[in-house]
Image (cartoon, rainbow, N blue to C red; front, side, top):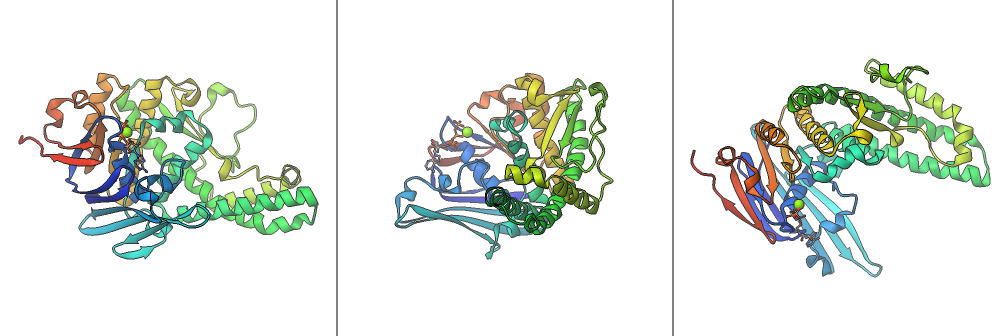
Length: 403
Ligand SMILES: Nc1ncnc2c1ncn2[C@@H]1O[C@H](COP(=O)(O)OP(=O)(O)OP(=O)(O)O)[C@@H](O)[C@H]1O
Ligand SMILES: [Mg+2]
């Protein structure tokens, strides 16, 4: 998969930008606060149709344009997938009215309006940002978000399941709270339990398989990157576990259980039963305590949980491994290499790991890397790369040297 053209209008500090995007590797160079990360963010938005920032879509609209009564930030990507060409346009629209303003999104794929969940996955990208070390070191919701973003791009039904599941959790929580505060017939929960178990089982089943597939690929890549020094394992920790670990298992003998044989039906019936067993407790607490919204995932290197024990370089390398694994996984699943987006990727890595990483970047058909300092890169390697200079939201192309 290759992006062939990118146009931005009123997106962050870009008032207007339009560029043809070549194949291969592109180095985006510029000082701090010039717009390098914003370009990667815009491209990634085309893949996920939602921001990787916790904040709202509103923040992406250019602040000056946002003063107007009607402001539209627009990202247009033209891309090739095998022999076919497509055009994806996202508009983030802010309409001011009496009480503040309303922000909505419009998505057009090949000129036809689509819902986000219909267009997600048309274009695939993998993004590495330095702050993504939070996926390993931060709270569990970072890890769930990471998984959901990767899965949704590849399995469009998963995006629908997640959306419906989270609505069911809210509605079920509201009912639990009402039952706790004002009483009523607990049988009212049956309807929500069934929907929660059905959608929840789909999500758990998908996560079991995705994590297992990523674990295999990541293990291999990490072994290579660390010169055989580290064994990386991913360990899924589902809040409702369809195959709980045996009690009293010695910690040293622990290895992630293999849940791959469990059917989605089996997960659903087990989940439903667990909801029944927990009903009294959940009514007392007024909240849904088990299910994919409480899942977690551990990154284990040489038997140690990196979230707790990892050194900075170790966590950074593991995150880089995960991104490369994601890239290979998407290729296996969709048949196309995703576009690789790497923000300030070389910082904090030793020379050895830098060289290794640079070799891997060219595996994808197209990669975009940002840097404040071209000097970090091996001149021989980047001689054939296109360079984009970014200055205050303006892009200037520099053709690669002839090699
Ligand atoms: N909605 C917005 N409207 C206008 N400007 C914005 C908006 N959001 C962010 N900016 C500004 O855009 C500029 C570019 O931000 P960006 O994160 O892309 O910089 P960068 O080149 O990646 O910098 P660094 O090297 O520090 O990471 C920043 O000055 C930021 O404050
Ligand atoms: Mg940046």
